[in-house]
Image 1: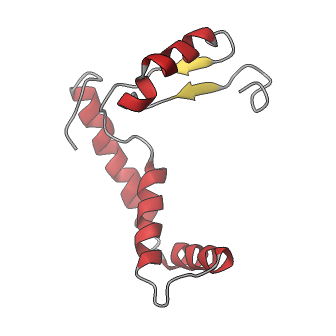
Image 2: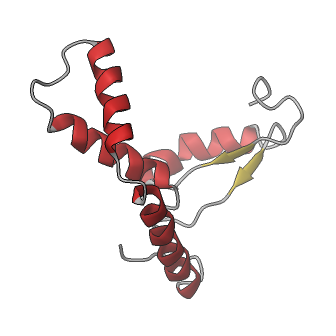
Length: 115
């Protein structure tokens, strides 16, 4: 964290999934709590990052390609082509979906929610 955010303004965020909320991980975070801020995230909350939605959409598009990418360069080209083929409103739709997720999380007062 200090290499990336030498100004001390970095934040560590986790989703509190069981593997990342283990005793070992929790102890590690507590021991280093002075090195960075830890952004606490409600467990089992809706995904609040559209990056995973974008990744899933690109992955799905690449998986449908025929022939499938065979080399890292083929994969890069397929990802770039898939990105360019996305309709202009695709990202806007994801942002609007995020608004519903935030409203759901607020109604649950940060507690667990259903997707």
